[in-house]
Amino acid sequence: MLAASGRIGLARGFNRTVSIAPLPILVLQDDGVLVFVDTEEAQSVDISDLPASERFFSGGDTTVRGFALDRLGTGPTVDQPGAAPTIDANGFPTGGNAMLVMITELRVPVGGAFQMVGFLDAGNVFDRVSHFQLDEIRGSAGFGVRYRSPVGPIRVDLGFKLDRREFAGERESLTALHFSIGQAF
Picture 1 (spheres, one colour):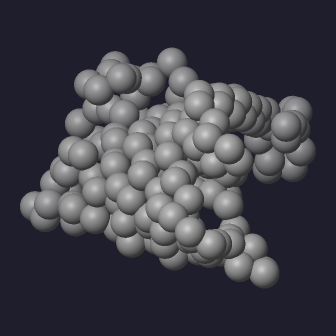
Picture 2 (tube, rainbow, N blue to C red; picture 1 turned 135 degrees about the horizontal axis):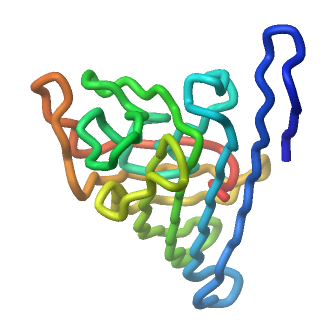
């Protein structure tokens, strides 16, 4: 938890709370289905008061696969009185004060140090928790390969957006390929 209070020079105080609740559903030996829910909120007067470095961003290999890094957000047409967009009309993320991420992954050993993975991810970034809208949750599904190397797990995932949208007249790409070293969660 990060906290600051009052005005210090030109600074504006805010609180940031992060809550992570992994929920195992089914475990097959050391591998299986994992569900990871991550909700975060920064308390502030409005989104413009929160420095960009402290705002929440989502999308990418550790949050919602199928989306490029930090490319999730609610658009300028969000149907919520007083809600500020967290992604602009061109698809550029501006970040938000609240984020919801849900990750479900099924890992199946295929021999030796290799595993196949199927996943469903969902989430989005909102200007405030009070402006959360279920129809603004974006989802992705996909598959991947894991290799348990001596330096840590090597991951390759291919995610598919379940609801592609248009920004500046262009439709979002269908897929995102993610390559990384280490566990996603």
